[in-house]
Length: 352
Image (cartoon, rainbow, N blue to C red; front, side, top):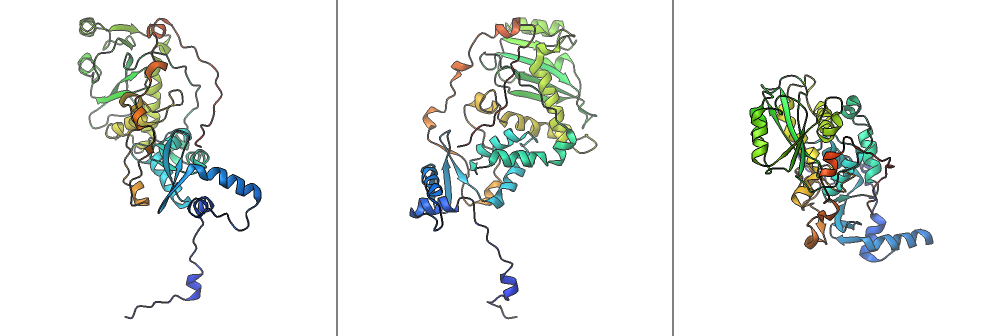
């Protein structure tokens, strides 16, 4: 069968090439030429914005305000990127701000990230079905990381592969969470859980798995102060209670309708939590603990380009996090019977 080198006109008319949003910027950076019909105001704006862009054939890169160079992507790629950062393993179906921050952590940029993330999350069927409630942000206690931790047991759904409970420990500064699926909620699970050394203080409720002779002797051996939350004031262990609610919401969106596969998806939910941007911290829990941004799985994102998409930064020598803003007395929180919260207006972080 002969190969035809020509297409009928009616087929050619169906071929459309959309102009990318950065076409004018790209042309100006590469050739220093303005669009033919551009006004004087548009030329001044284009000239002012062009100093933040770098042309490296075949991609255009943006130097953002945090000194990270991110790749500008096409409009056709935006939905795939948001789908990956919101719904894929490690996304966790978080809100619009954390989804947008995860896009930035992947080294991608377009001018309307936060607006598009808000619209995408607003139309997510699983998020709307779960109906996540909006709560006021709590004031962050000022103390070193992995210094004061809260522990708790929770029973999210039905039995999953023989596991009935989730035992978790959350750091009160970095919001770093360790959690495991357990078959029982007894003291043997608690004493064999620590992974990051011994904390200075431990907060828990009055459950028999926390208040017993074995636990008391273990804490006394390592010099850990045990603070107990009373029944009528669970806010004493507020971070653990908050994450209990958060992990249930995340697993509710990720699991099957019968909710029996939550133990298999627990690690994905933890990963999403650890790499999610925290407004009060200004970064993710992963970056506070390890001093760098987590490398997220780029299997789907690398299909959009033939090169790596990880962020490049001009501040590689200054990657160590400054803990001076987080170091203060941990006993202030432990001696205070309740949290004090301030009404702080929500704001939308700038990306330029």
